[in-house]
Image (cartoon, rainbow, N blue to C red; front, side, top):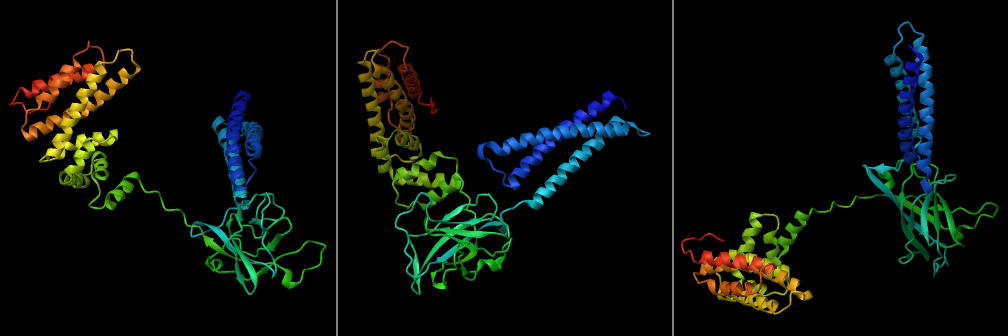
Length: 424
């Protein structure tokens, strides 16, 4: 095998070594809790990837020259051996890292925390004001700089037993180290350490309260008398995951089911225009027909979306009540009056365009309801439409009023065709 092929093997092995080293280091950073401060973990990953690439290059070059001296040398043989060695070394590093990692213990596949009770000496008083560090408890691994999450001491709800105050806390358990202590801090003057004789991987027996453990004391100082020492007991708690958030569809179904039968129509209407649901639609239509007084009121609502829903709901009124007809007619008169006011505005008036757009939207919702209503009641629907058409064509074309005029013209033409029941 030539030197050029050997360098190609070395290059490809180096690339593989770079990626394997980077990925392995990323995994080990997580398992071994490498600090993320100022991007330390990222810098380490980049450095190890570069080293891995360099080592892979040397390994590939060495292996290829060894293979070149064999009786059956070959490019693929050299690449396969060198690549296999890189992958094997990466796998070995992962195995060693996994065995050395301090994973958070679990029980039944769920996270754990420790419930604490701290029993204070008689006469001890809780701090009235906390300093910047507060009052907390936390698991600590002696000699380790790994941060462990804290749990606040519940100073607001102490209890008393035999004249001694007991304060509680809950602390996340995120280490399986057998060598750990519990720090409990009330204040700068009362900062305690308790030995935590808990197994690496708690079992169901650890869900019961432990015996009371005495607090330690500073090195070089005399042991305090029993009655002056704090005591601690603890038990493991399974952290139940929060229930999954209900889907929007399920949430809306529950809201619908919770509506009382006498709920006002405005609470029923929104469900008519959501994702089709035959059962809900049937119920809402029943309420539309039973609550036509509410429907008439909503047709005159100042709430734009609610008023639009009400006009869309008119088609479900099988026998429209007089108040519904009156409300729809009143809207038509209001639209006509709005067009009359808009015609009085100059084209340069800043209110002119907004007025036209609002009238166009209102007309588009009104025309469908009035067409269906007039057909269902068998009345002549032309007069209000004719008035709107005449007003909408009073000005020159070229504004949003054109759409109103064109639609009104189409409706009038359809009304003049008695046999044509098709909606324009």
